[in-house]
Length: 394
Image 1 (cartoon, one colour):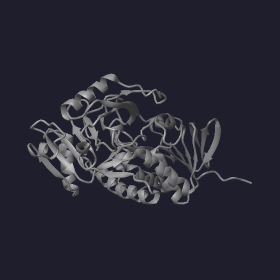
Image 2 (image 1 turned 135 degrees about the horizontal axis):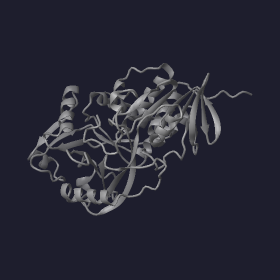
Image 3 (image 1 turned 90 degrees about the horizontal axis):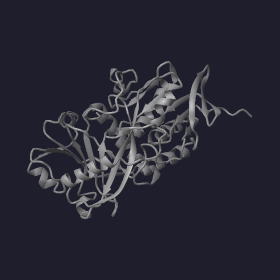
Image 4 (image 1 turned 120 degrees about the vertical axis):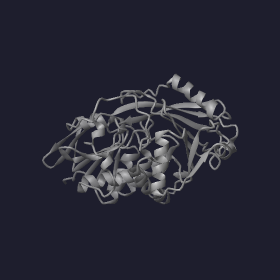
């Protein structure tokens, strides 16, 4: 009996790939999701207990997309019976003249996003956990929160399977090429045929695109995270302490902090866009001791009530030159779409991006605002860099 090949193969079982598999399977497409490790692995950008979700963006395109993402995450919560999103409120702080902070405030005002503006002494009174300079200001957005990354990926994978998608783990794709009637993929040295392909492979996206003749400069960095003890659990937990992003005019351009999500786990701090470039196949997770010292020093100044470091870990960013996503069909290969929703802030958008990718490979277009994310945009041209400008990602 002849077995029909899948209509769509999705490469990559992180949050973007699993969300794309859900969107495709729901529409009745025969969908195959390929993951080179295991679903939920810790070698990429989709693992761990927390990712920020926020409406505080400098570019309106992101605000529009994340508004839809909120509703889709809540729908997935209802379908899966899992708690995925915890509302904590979000605080952006910095000097009044910081371009990214000023632009974020203006966009929220234009888009009607509810927020409050704080300056000294109100900032210190409202958030006594922080020791801010008198000149600093804050923007508080009550809808911001934290997504449970591990739970989100698991829920998406389960939903994809329940809708009919086939998930194949430990399936490394070495390359793909176009034929007269579809695509052929080299999967564990076996040829797999498909009608279309979505590449959502995170750190490995650049290599896969090269096999279809597409050159896209992506830089993979290893970023450092620390969890510090919170002796005052009530003052640093959900309901008391928001997710916080400090906008800076020097490196690193942003530093983020998360409330303690469960007793004893500590407050998570992260240097943003500070890591060194690595080879995608470097799975060592080596700790950058200088970055760790920088984080600890920052905590002592900005959040002095925190205690010692409990754990130190790493995650990955896959950076474009302009730090925006790439969501597009591959030039000259209309059966292949690429979803590089990375640059350190893509997780929250996954349910929307999944819909976008299926729209692209089935109809060639989407009604959602994605001109900013075209693969042929001017912002992707120029010399590659591993050190990134101090600008807001959106």
